[in-house]
Amino acid sequence: MRHLAKALMFPGFLFSVLACTGCLQAQSRTTPTAEEIVSRMLEKNGERQAALEHYRTDRTYQLEYDGTGGKHHAEMIVRTEYVAPGRKYFTVLSESGSKLLCREVLRRLVDKEEQTSEKTDWQRAMFSTDTYRVELVGREQLEGVNTWVLKVEPKVYSNVAYRGKVWVSMDDFATVRMMGEPAKSPSWMLDSASFDSWYMRRGSVWVPAKNVSTTHVRIGGEAKVTIDYGKYDVLLAKQVGAVEEHGRDRVRSVTLAAGLLR
Image 1 (tube, rainbow, N blue to C red):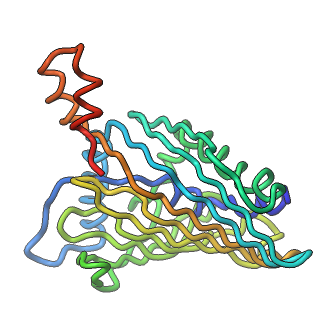
Image 2 (cartoon, one colour):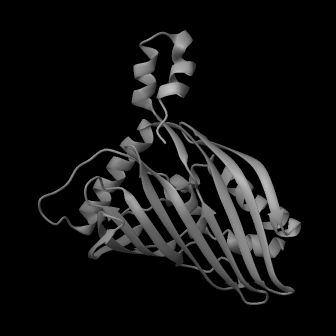
Image 3 (tube, rainbow, N blue to C red):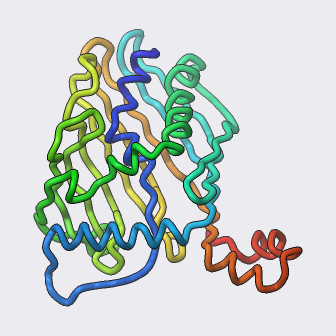
């Protein structure tokens, strides 16, 4: 099961889990180039990240494994809290199904995300025109949101690179969906691997909504991990500033009562 955990934690999947985008609006009257879309997206991502002060949500991790020994299921409920400028805290609330899969796969995924969120390596590996070739291949409406569809291919094939598509909202240049696969197989054990990540608006910010990772192991079958990110409590820096005007002693109580977006 430890080998399965390593196979599941391929870089594209971890990157899509770690990505978190946000707010603010801007739209061009003419069709921008792929490079212009990415440039605006990175600019707005920085503003959104700076505005995001805190969020809390209860995630549901589900693992369906069909391979050696038949079919197995494992599930974990994990409370996740984000605190600016990039720290995440994870608390396992419950576990069900296979104890082995919970311990050796799901908990390892959570631990890996918590460790990786503290490192700057992922900032350098993030999607940009310096690290990826981008091509505008169309437009698409996803759940009422008009998006640009970008095809992405890494300029350098490394263990943290992926290929696939990115859907970027036209009105505020936020990531709406990411779908791809590792550009380079991280393990000889993998026959194939893929991820599909969706994001949603919460107030004026975008947050992860759902992530599905499917891994075909050469010896062992197929594993599918689904993360449902649940409902969010979101706190923005502007809301914090507004509350602080009423006095330091009231910051926490007023913020929790009125400063959270669900």
